[in-house]
Image 1 (cartoon, rainbow, N blue to C red):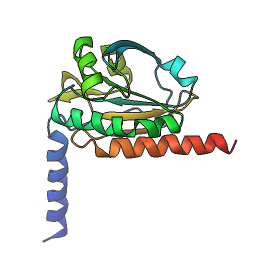
Image 2 (cartoon, rainbow, N blue to C red):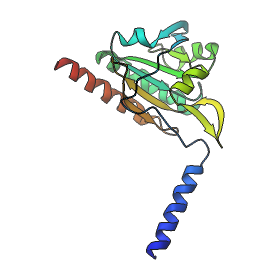
Image 3 (cartoon, rainbow, N blue to C red):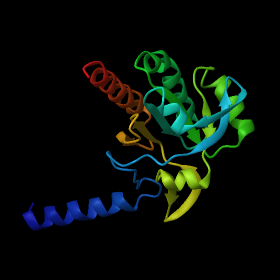
Image 4 (tube, rainbow, N blue to C red):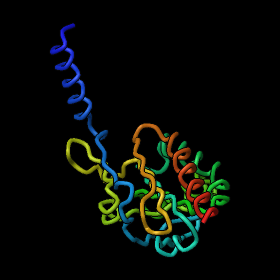
Length: 189
């Protein structure tokens, strides 16, 4: 195939991928200051209040956004985070999941799918905007969040960001690696 034709096909393929609805994403860059927020949520089926600034006093925070409670991939992701929750605690990290779901849905999700291991909270439109996790299709908000995970250091800086709407599997591995690296850094200082 001619070089020009290959280049044209690659450009066309890239343009088509970019136009797939819901797959375009953005996230806050590593090194950015994490926006402060407080939110209502649930832990083990009970109402829970979360405050980022307060949580960071105890160690890094793993903040993961998921599109919708009780959907197949979000349920699998919650199970994976629940299974790894002791590893986050051992590394000194606080884990919290966030979506735009309402409090009654999150109360059920926190006990059934998060297995009482970590809280989930309702992300307000301001939090969704601040963390750049608005899931859009054809340029319009769906009212859901992207599947994006952040690790926030105690200095309020984002040390890791990962977005993958379709595949939850790397979210746990990447966030665990980031909090373990922070733990090692703290131990050497």
